[in-house]
Image (cartoon, rainbow, N blue to C red; front, side, top):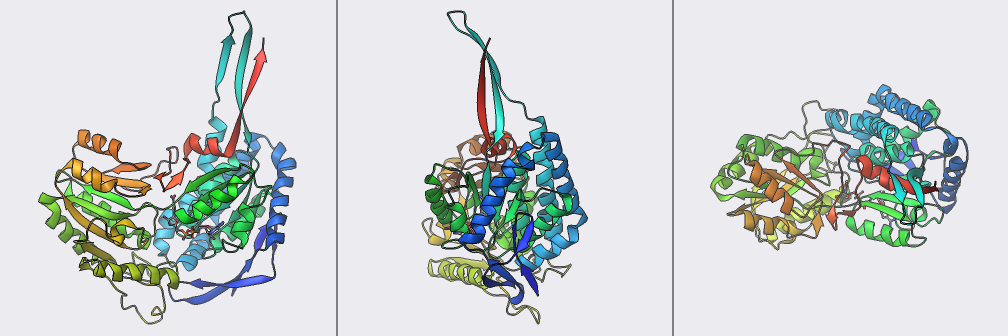
Length: 484
Ligand code: NAD
């Protein structure tokens, strides 16, 4: 049985309260998680603040970059430890953790280390009417102590996506991983010690959100900025907490992302891409497609092909090398997704595929499994069409014109991502420009260049991270004006 301890000031520590960590593939208890109270959170913040004043705050950019390279290398050396930890916490296939979670988790340290090393700043030569002259130089400094609040769907990847740039910019961090997925963030603490990252630079506190570690951390007055990934409603609570003391926030929240498939697309490519965008990680991706709009001439063919491909999905435990889909994160989330499956029927859906609980092999019956599911025929204002389900499911609806589909795609409070399938480049650009989202993929999905802006419009978030946008968030930009 594993124990998931807090990592504070370079040491693993326990606290009075604990809760269970379960593997959702079979609902077995795999460990005990310590829940941080105010005392542990305060200890972590004090350690992070002290490290800013200590060796970390005085380290040269080059030395910092070298350390972050070491962290990335060490994650890769301990690759299978991270794969095992992520797969057990989430129930995802190890093949997926090996392909996405762990390599991208390691890359987040290298990419942002390179970025800070090569980042230019502005300079302006000033000449006033009275002959006064000055040179203005912009200078970036670390923001200070950053709270990182992470979700459970890609625990290591989404945590390091924030920890990487935060540390590269010279900040210290306290991570509050999701209560569902403590393992890889805890392992990262071991890696930090193995690489010689000074104590207090990277801290981890475990626990829940309200009245627990999440709330205690985000309301702590010595936290200088908060970066969050999770549900929109949680983002609202965090924004309120951050308003006290005017702390900066970056919010990456939920989505109800459309895929728009035009009749002039490459149909095989569109079906294969939509298979990924709907079903990868059991649909638990903020960027996942849950609404598919298909131009009428190819509607029937598309539905038939997607259903045929989805019916071949093989559900299985993390170690099952043939499985290409795992389970949901928890029994609780399974109930939520199943309630939407039920609601879809009540709202008048035609169930093209799935809609229930699959029959799993012996030993997995207690796991959080749901069938890959496809619906058609729902009204545009159905709750299943409007609300984020966060499961392996989508609704497919025909459309007749660009104008109509833009209206449909934009008819949501969310604005995270969209994908557009067409071989007509002018149309691709025209449609992309009118979609009210932060990210559009044309003839692809989830193709991520870490230098590009990432974030959501509307209720899908505030701010952008990625590339220079991460540097914007994790640094204070100071202007130094020198009169000549
Ligand atoms: P969640 O909002 O329930 O939890 C996220 C984190 O916030 C957890 O660590 C949780 O303990 C913490 N938390 C909860 N309430 C809090 C509070 N009041 N104060 C401080 N912390 C609190 O989200 P989840 O269920 O873990 O993740 C799924 C959601 O995340 C989906 O809505 C998904 O779309 C979204 N998501 C968005 C992105 C993105 O980049 N936009 C990426 C992944 C997931």
